[in-house]
Amino acid sequence: MGDVVLALMRTLGSLRNGRIWVHVLAPALISLVLWIALAVWGLGQMVNWLLGHQPLTLLVAWGVAWLATILAYMGAWMAIFALAYLTASLLAALIVMPLLLKHLAEADYADVAAMGKDSFAAAAVNSLGASILFVAGWLLTLPLWIIPGLSLILPLLLMAWYNRRTFAYDALSMHASESEWKALRPQTKWPMFMLGLTMALLAHVPLLGLLVPALAALSFVHFGLEALRRSRGGAVVTIEGEGP
Image: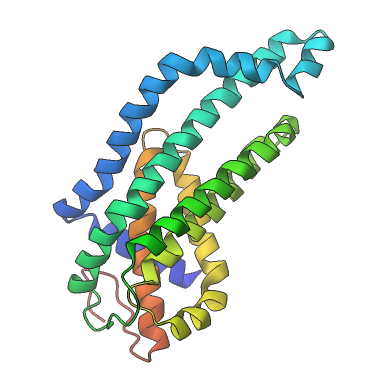
């Protein structure tokens, strides 16, 4: 967990830079405007669709239509939030991540040589693939949400997985060689999942949620480049603003 905490501390340190805030705010604002507009137009239709499918139809048949309606509205708003988060994440991965990576590589990790491939196509395929699996997982687990507690746990686990799958590759693809990536992947899989889970928890904080994809991109860059630095024998463990 020490590496996760270090990445989070460095992420907070990076937020003192106004340029970083531009990158953090842009995908959140674009996604917010888009999905508020779509929610105004389609919320009622989504609620009606949910009420017409199991398990909510069972609740209606059992005479607790009021509960089914509440769950339908909850499900609809959570789906809208998930899609907004997904949109912000795609924007963060495809547009913001390369900018953050370039800035941090020059400012904080100049000693970490770029030995990988800077491929927009590979990053896009990775992000889109993760998004498709995320949506599929969300839809497949919807019937389980009526089980007490799972409506909180399942979205967190799905979002944690999505964060790791999307941002881990992008954070290292340009700097790590193929052999380095293969060596680092199993070593960092669990810590990166925990970093993704931390960001998933933050995503459920009101007003902060849509900032999280860009913050996740920033934290994964810090985590990934520090892990690569250490694997090359050049570990310098510092928190930005402090000495070694």
